[in-house]
Length: 177
Image (tube, rainbow, N blue to C red):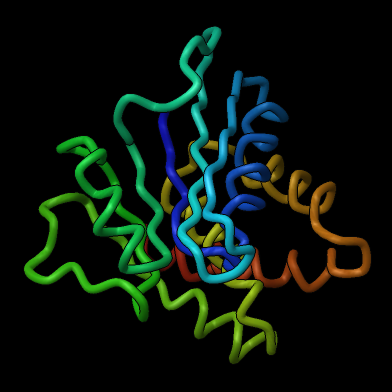
């Protein structure tokens, strides 16, 4: 499975991809995570690619995407062509306009708004998004994602990040029905 997390610097894109890859390893799978971002630490384009496989991985970048997670309009516009015809699109609803739609299996969540209103921090949108993805995709287990989050978020933020993950998961379970 090839997944691209994309958006702009300051949204936690790289951390999201890293955590997702670690969770896959916790599940006993092979995973490779790469990242690319502009010279700006906040506001510039950013992506994190994760390749997950039962077998050895010999590619450093996915040739095409099974899943595109886009948290900005620029990311959607730039990376949509790499998404397979039968791929899954997961969007930050307030920041991405698909026009007439892309024809892909599409899910939307207002992760930034939820993070701001429920937790007082927009930066936690990435954890809301990870919970949402976990609920609708089930490519990695919930337990492994929770463990990867707890192992990789800054000390002292574990509880808040776990709560943001849970909120996204709850919303995703509603979408998956």
